[in-house]
Image (cartoon, rainbow, N blue to C red; front, side, top):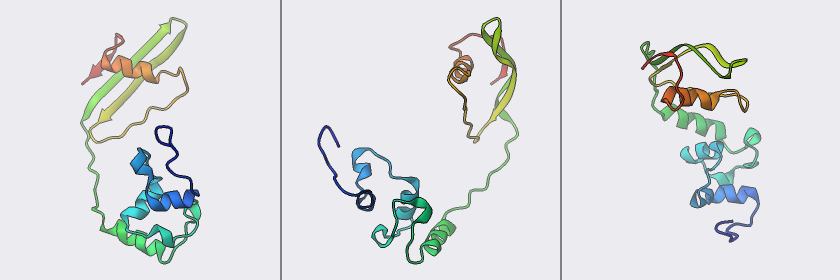
Length: 141
């Protein structure tokens, strides 16, 4: 549906083959994006809706050839941190510290994911780092 109107009424395999998802602001599954980038004809594949079992003529060879032509980005170890947090402690109430002596460094080109349950302190940590919550901490920026 798009703005209350049915725009596609077809089996999932046809929707994937026709590349209509991006027209409506929807991302195609990553495996379909890879197949398209490798110029693989999706109509020649069977089991397209099952990424674990997609089958097609010379499919593995085509994907390997595509991946081999991509530039090889070597990672370089950057040792100087952009941000270092040392001995960060924070508590909303005195009895239950949210952080107790937290230490970490963030380096350029690193991708970091902050994962935790609701109430575990993810947003609080970001708010402290950005200055929205004041806290006594040692941090080099």
